[in-house]
Length: 320
Image (cartoon, rainbow, N blue to C red; front, side, top):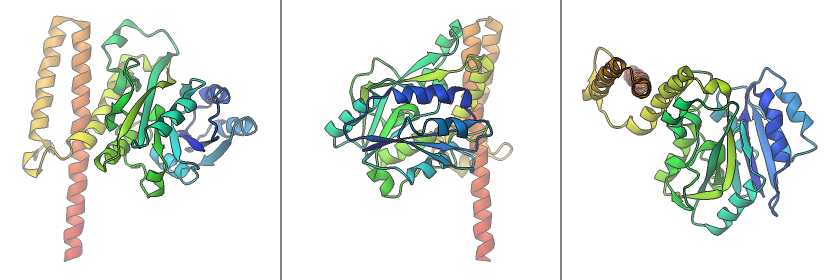
């Protein structure tokens, strides 16, 4: 037995098509279960889920607490079997998806995490400038040419990953402070978990034959959307990778951000100005993207520094 789990919110326009693709999945011999957690939808999501109950081994739940990771943690209470497969509500799996993940988990018993291939399903033809975009952080896509083998935990992505359920039975959960929660959030909800598991000694394996298609909406093929994504990516990147890089002595008092990071932002702003003078569209785009990425890091740094100060003040007040 394995369990597939994903969260959804107000995606009724696409959810029906996604679940139709799940109806075409080839079932592993061990059987499978699908858990979908409605994270406070205000559209007809509940009706769509109800319409598939007789066609899928579906268990629908509701988690009103905002945040994708909060919803996934609710779903983890109901998983069955030895393998939990995670995906998203805008992902279309190939028919043999579960068979390939099941096979890899059965063969590579020393590995805890399994990541598959994520390719795009474009709602509209992508414009030429999309080739300038980093596909992993912007559209959550993987390299389809990557061969089977050990994989960095940082490269196991939420739309197509499987984790042995023993991890969750031991009490490990997603960090609800990161990941999608409204329009303003630090990216990296699944990455925070896989990185934490990697630090505990758990290994990841790449499964190139486990393929899903990630729906890329027309609205995402917009430079403004991509630059906002860069900002959220920067927030998550700081929290995951740079939070321990700076100590209090590196923090500038005026802006509450580490001085080296402030210097990087100044350099990026200068680079953007130079790119603007060149009138090179690609150079301007890349400079804007990098500056927004650093701005996101600065915002997250300030938030975390202020949180740390509040915690320190609370400890001192309780001590007195």
